[in-house]
Image 1 (spheres, rainbow, N blue to C red):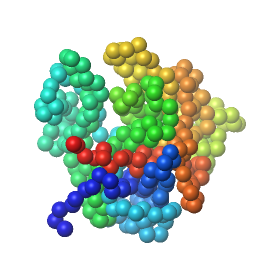
Image 2: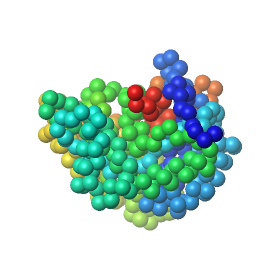
Image 3: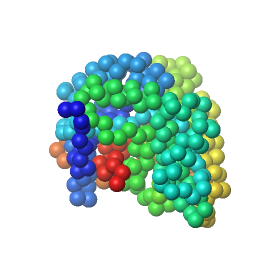
Image 4: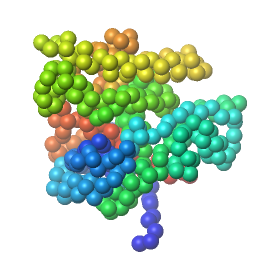
Length: 354
């Protein structure tokens, strides 16, 4: 067919293309629960992606084909997909513009983006969401992605025979999961720990401001390996079993991880300050919720609680999901499916503008 026709009521699945792993999940609404139809993970050489661009789509497609045909738990019943791009590879910016008609917003956002993004505007895809409107101005959250990154993901989808309904950032997907799984009626800092970085956002009825901090799960593993003079595999076991918690090596581990953790705390404080200074209400940040593969490191929530003087806890998205006859991921693996679960929860109607 020369043309692809999308229907709002047809199902989609989520596809999360990470640093060296690809994860897929399909979720269907089932009354008050959400039914997981199928999920899976595949690994590939991280050299297949350079600076966010998929340079070897055939390698990733081969891993994905192996996953879809042999290694799925359950089944993926649709070719329509919502794909995530790492938030670290996007430019995000809050904008305050004069009150404009909807038809003029896109041009105004484009002009504003030219002022702060060090890439020619013709080499970028730009999208935005309205955070707040008043009689005088409009607050927006703009997301800008280099075309070469998005186009490389589209090439991968074509190799897999998939129909791309939407492409979104990882923090956007994680935010959707938070909304559907947690108490979200209070201003919240969300931290999504990835492999190489942590995405931080403030959620207050929508994503208000986002940022990315260097240092993810692999970064912590390497620091522990260097500090204790052990292999990366041994360091990973130590990180997941003991982390920052009580152990014979607690002081050494804490000292090794403190520089990265202090950067994270600094960025969180900056974003809280931004939110509270720009807000038009007396609302304060009430909680911090962590998610992603690195969030389950023992002692991490306690460290952040002590540093920020705010309640910090892990997101528990699985309380409202049902696996029925499927074997769910184990307790360690569950955290790595957070982003793709949020991606899979996108309502197909979100991809269409009325």
